[in-house]
Length: 176
Ligand code: SAH
Image (tube, protein in one colour):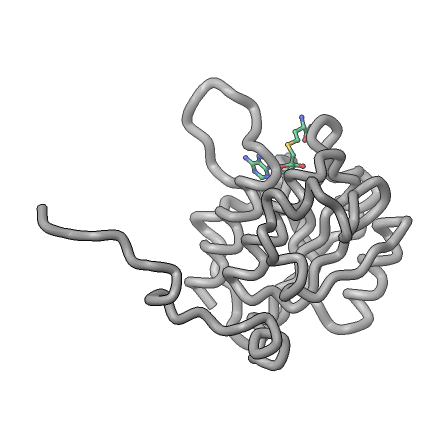
């Protein structure tokens, strides 16, 4: 194989200022009490890649400025619009009032498989991800329109939360 890796400059990415003005995807991301700042930073980076409308950091989630967030976000914390809510339910209420369909990304009895889900291009979706140990709180699951599950085929019960963010955003973005 004759090939070479592209230089960052050759990737032709827009600046954070251009990004802020660019149209977004109609997807919002909510982190419900995610404890690791590295996972928050990684979520910022995926939200930037898929042009998320806004990242809602709730409860114990670390917020910028943070050296730990910066380590995994590597600057995406400056492009992605974000807000902090102490109570995740307040974020859910705000998103509902803005017309978002609320999706808990969680393993639940009635969860829809990500494989089977077809988002409507004319709808806005808020996807909620949970704490590394306790998951999305039951109150938030109850307030959601439905739950979405990422199929898994190995031995572990769940994926890392930031990996889940990347998978779900990629899958929804390509289907919209
Ligand atoms: N034991 C925890 C696991 C949390 S994993 C629990 O009881 O839920 C952290 C978060 O990653 C979850 O709350 C969920 O948002 C996401 N996640 C991980 N694996 C997932 C899967 N297979 N399907 C959907 N969401 C998943």
